[in-house]
Length: 62
Image (cartoon, rainbow, N blue to C red; front, side):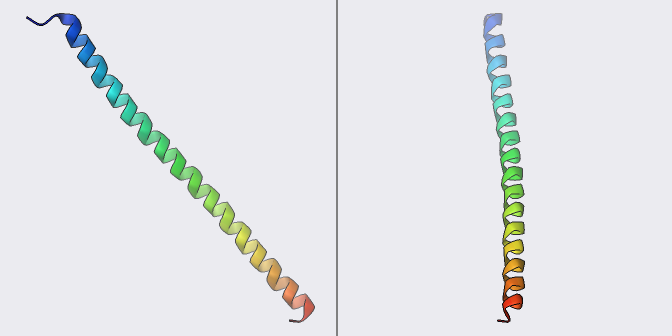
C-alpha cells in the first residue's frame, strides 16, 4: 500500500509542471508582443526619416 502523502507529492509535481509550462507560454507571448511593438516603432521612425530626407532633397532642389 502506497502512503497517501506520496499521492499529494506526485499531484504537487504535476501541478507545478503545468503552471511552469503555462507561465512560460504566457511570458513568450508577452515577449513576442513587445518585440512586435518595438519593430513597429522602429519602422515608423525609418519611414519618418525617409520622408524628412525626401523633404530636404526637394528643398535643396536635388
